[in-house]
Length: 95
Image (tube, rainbow, N blue to C red; front, side, top):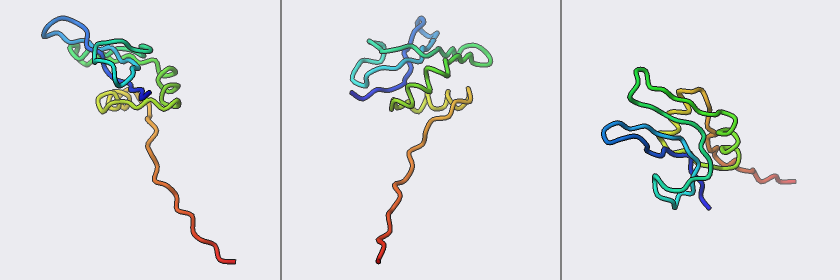
């Protein structure tokens, strides 16, 4: 099961409000989710972002992949996402 951290759109027409949720990637955007991590309100000035950093870091450690928008929100909040490192080549050792 591929798990993603993404935005779930709430609010009225032309007045978006988003919840940051952990969901199976096969579920619809506004469908069923596993856990809610916080919210994002782009209409306020400055935009209001509240994310439970403990829950988010737990899900990142478990392997959940954040979408590009959620990565940007994490960066604003100060939460770092683990970057994929390049595989280390083992050199053949001649004895």
